[in-house]
Structure formats: structure tokens, C-alpha cells
Image 1 (cartoon, rainbow, N blue to C red):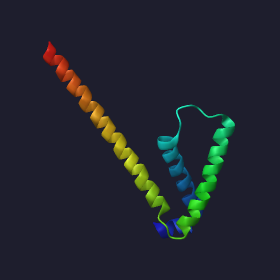
Image 2: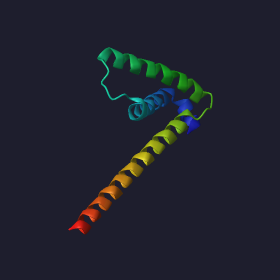
Image 3: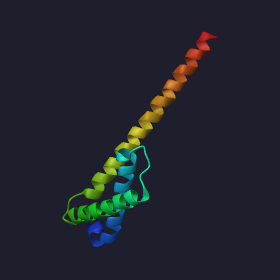
Image 4: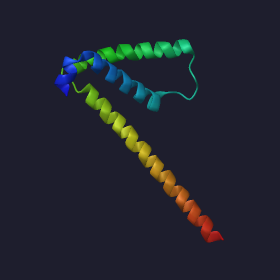
Length: 100
């Protein structure tokens, strides 16, 4: 996988940019909406950072693999929150049934 991404740097850049965007939007985004100029500046800076990470990826560091692990862990946390919320709803429904 590392060699394939080294042979296809544009695809590696796009993958890094998409994964960075996903991580930013799930973890670091603030609740309030940014203005359009700030949003554009943010994504330009993210593209610049993706270029730097692409250099590290090309130098045999597993950047894409690490970002994939981060996304996988975020999805795992999301599934866990969903399961816990479902358990709490079920417990609340059981408690309500016992009352009546």
C-alpha cells in the first residue's frame, strides 16, 4: 500500500485531504458556523498541511494508515455511543413499564 501511494502522489494527496477533513469536522469543528472567508482559509491551510503530510508519506511514514486508524477509532466511539444510548432508552422503557 505504501509503495502504491508513492507511485500515485495525487491520489495520496486527495486521500490525505479527505481524511484530514473528516477528522477536523468530527473532532475539531466548533459549534458556530464560520464565515465563508474563514472557511476557505481553513481548507487552504488544510490543503497545505496535506501537502506536508504527503511529503512525510512519500518518505515512508504511514500517514494514510494512521489517519485511517484515527477514523476507525472515531467510528468505534460513535458506535459505542449509539449502543449506550440504546441501552439507556431500553432501561428507561423497562422502568416505565414496571411503574404501571
